[in-house]
Length: 48
Image (tube, rainbow, N blue to C red; front, top):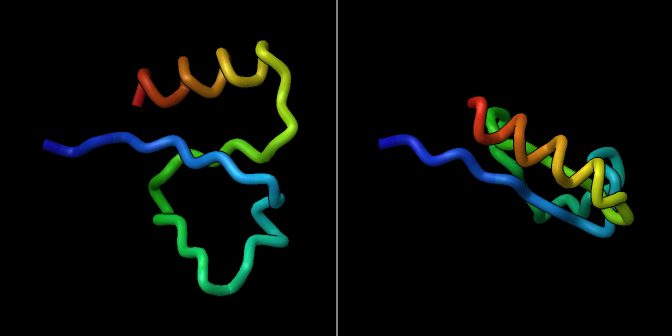
């Protein structure tokens, strides 16, 4: 069973520290984000 994962960070995807590795098929949401952006990303994750 595959699990979809949503990563959240205070860094943008381009400025993540080198020791942080996010899988290519994972979803990413940088902070700060709006409630609407969070809801949209959750819908995207649930849709696969």
